[in-house]
Amino acid sequence: MNPYSALPPEAFWKTGVERSNPFQIENLYTKKWSIARRHKIATAGSCFAQHISRYMNRSGYEVLNVEPTPGGLPQELAQKYGYSMYSARYGNIYTLLQLLQLLREAAGTIQIDDEDLAWQRPDGAYIDAFRPAVEPDGLPTVAEVRKHREYHLSRVREMFQNMDIFVFTMGLTETWENAATSLVYPSVPGVFGGTFDPEVYKFRNIGFADNLRAFRQFHKELVEFRGKRPLRYLLTVSPVPLTATASGEHVLPATVYSKSVLRAVAGQLAQDHRYVDYFPSYEIITNQAARSVFYENNLRSVRNDGVETVMKVFFSQHPRLSALPAKAGKSAEKTEEDVQCEEAVLEAFGR
Amino acid sequence: MSRRILVLGSSHAATLYLAKEVFAQRPSVTVDWFVTPANLEFQIDQNTTQISSPPAYSSRAQSNRTVVVGGRDEGIFASDYDAIIYSAIGLRPVGVLKSHPARALAKMPVSEGLLNSMVREHENMRWHRGNLEALRSAGFEGRVICEPWIRPIRLPAGMSMEHWTRFCDAEAQYVGQLGDALNCEVLPRPQAREYLSAPKDAANQETDATHGSRSYAISMVNRLLDHLDVEAERQTA
Image (cartoon, rainbow over all chains, first blue to last red; front, side, top):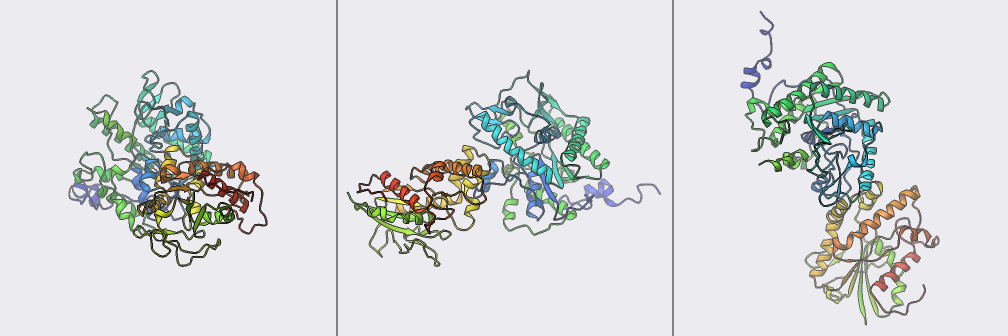
């Protein structure tokens, strides 16, 4: 008799992975707590979170949408303009530092200058540097960018105040930081707008300790902002590899490093805090037993059956509150091609 | 020079009907009306170009005769018209007030790019485009004047002046995009302040919170005829 002799099949690689069906993995995830119909869920994070957001919304959960699509706007256009991706129109929030920064800006504990906020494009238009893809045509003036951002922040404040559960998908550790202000950006200047100045913008690869600290600080400040009202988190790690790395490493180890850090942070937080649950969507997609079958030919984008497998596991613990509407089938065919990923634009710079 | 004009539209066109006597003051103009009430939008058959409305049709403007453009019933053809006043902008059955782009615009800043997309791709606009294409394909070669939504003279109950002004300004911005989207001329329209300073027609039964009063309709029709350069013995209404 030893500690391994009484373990269930899923505790062993051979039975848990090698001989398992990657489309139907047993006992992979056990929820920490339930999600009720009354719970208001907010979603944010890396582009993979858009899938989770969609499925939860269609399954009867109350997913907040504080910046709804203007009526009558077709879905494809809504998405092009950053609507219906997440609970608010913030685009992708790739890092925990970016998330913390958004909270501080919304809560008014930091102010962002015009030059940091509005980046000019070659055609003269301006974009919001912190959500560079939500206005594909840009805006005519810096003042207009400011006006749009203030409205957006007012909606974000409402979301932070009202949500009960925050679903956040961690995507990247690599980011670009303003050396003087420490502001971090979802995309490097010079891609969507702005000018890259190596004296101003520094590459930063956020390590385990800084990520962990960022999340804990976020939680502390958020609870304060909410007047001590508690909330819970469902964390996931995006299985989408890096499009490009600026770390100087080969993109493969850079990806593994980045995802490993994020996975470790999520695991640590879930171990330490009852209010944090980790959902293993990352493991489902990257599962060796699947032999990359859940990825498209580019080995980055997640195929629809991958997303469906992920959500099947999710709904096995958090049952659907209503059936998927008929149109969900068609929409569910969407792959990462249909989600908005600013980061993917970097591919164009590859030789 | 005599002109034949078709006024086509829903409740907004019905508001114009309040000023029908203005047309009478311009003898060179023959006007046909096809007006449906709010929430019962007209339909143009894409094949026959027959204009019809739902069975429950009843017009507060009592202009409930059917004009068959390009049909045989009254012997009037699309090509007979020199101009069409298309007065249904933004209107669609139930729920339109909630989905009308201008209403959304009043609540949030909207970029010109999004606004253009909203106007071009909004389901109402697709539908209106289809109507106008049907008329043109039926032989209509005249001018199409898009008569934008007549806004309330009175401040709607429960709406702050600030919000209401933003609404009007946003709508003006929205209307500004229509000409391109529908390939029509947009009738110049008064600004929000003009609505506020316009005389109130409290006694006018047709005045309501979402359309215009009779005096306002008169002003719009005069504006419209001037735009068409219609000669008239214009009188003060």
